[in-house]
Length: 305
Ligand code: ZN
Ligand code: ZN
Figure (cartoon, rainbow, N blue to C red):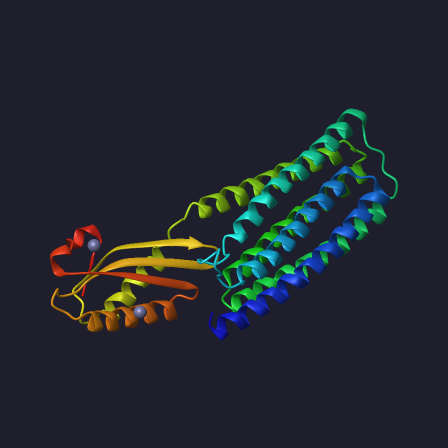
């Protein structure tokens, strides 16, 4: 790992740690808001925040664990820890949604009784403001450090802020109009939203666990770097990529004149490997060398050099 990568890891890990503290504060406030008000909608909002605590903890441990260098029994590193964390998260989210639905159902059937709804609302608004400020700061830092993961976390938190605003508005209407049945209905909507988020997190991490290829944009960049640094070789083909967390494994065949010495071919390989690994942070390249009769037509995706 380069020092620049290590430094970035430390910064991201620090943000992830603060993220846990913020999530814990917010969930405590939101639970108090539910406890003093008795509102099912505020209960659902608090449970949504518990999901954020778990997300924050999972993200932190994944960053720590995947930064662990490769060792004898994990020669390709520990990057996939991130996906296991995400799948666990998806499962926990489903549990949270189920708990809300049960409470919402009983609220619809038996009716709800509010205790101090105004106080509950006020506390919830306070925690929502904290969440919004933190989400904004994560998006800003993520953009500045060019960390898509951080930006995504901030954006996810921001959708929660929007849910909370919806809960607050809905609950205010319920209190003002006396239509208390709105309260468990809002909670049910929040539960469905949480289920949807959980489904997306779980399916995304599953497809990545299955050795998903790099995005077309990254593949294009790889081809560009090969073109710019492959002089001396004839062609590159069978470019395959596989993502594992923040690591990207890249392999391809490099066709060179059959009479070229191993020394010369190795110089080209090292040059290509260095150039790609410098251009795509977190990538690891392996090249297989072949003589010219193994060349493939350009239509098959080969890069002529
Ligand atoms: Zn080949
Ligand atoms: Zn070498």
